Length: 316
Image (cartoon, rainbow, N blue to C red; front, side, top):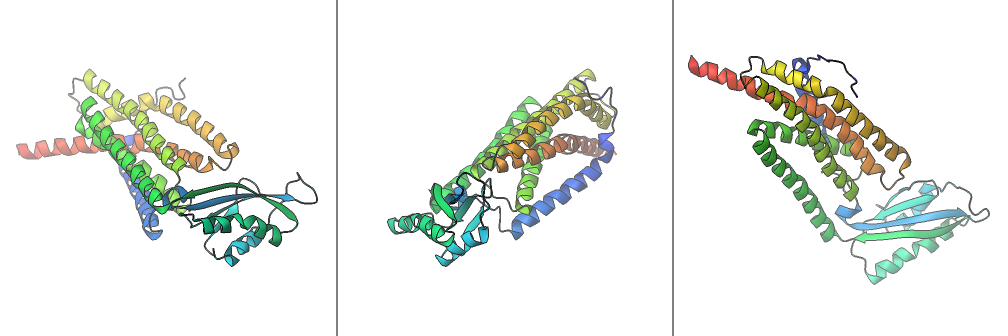
């Protein structure tokens, strides 16, 4: 399936503008992360306890109700948890509460169990059921953060080595630069939107690395094939890269578009549990498709032009 018949878009002509846009997005992401004190980690990483409650109308069981979230929050504030994060979870009758309690002693466990009765007392028009309770200690959370960062770092390192041997070193630099671009902007998006970084989000980031790399390698492979056709004696390297991107453009748009449709459906109808995962993938697919065209490939052109300029300067 070809969406474009013999496209001749001059992507390299706007590469300076693309670099500027990417630079602004990366800077905005880094500033947001710094101002927020780093990513906003979920309970999996920072430690704490997650409580989930279902509220049912006492008079009409089974009917959908809207729980006054402020009254639920006040119950936890009065019990000594003013920083508890209270929010709807999937519907207005399901409420999730995160409290900064990682090491659950018997005394704290009894206190947490008592919130069902406290909520029932504060909201007598509802019957309250505790549906879930998960606790993660701060030490375990810290270990998970280090493991996640290590997974991302080593995946990029291995990718650099792989592409360096399959293609050339400059191809590896372009691919890793594009991946760094994608991950930084996605993290910045989560920071700007104040969305938590959870284990599903880390899984999404690793998925983005693989997805973006696949797009980039398709373009790089076409560049290499075109270089072989010219026996590496290319007078217009920028034009060759342009031709290679145009030749793979239909494949890139179709692959990214169909994947994006599936992820958007997951985001809209998949429920609260995988919403953040889908959000990260949506952002990563859009940014990854952009970077394979406007970041990875232009780096090759810049590298080649500077190499040629250096050789010309040495001959003078």
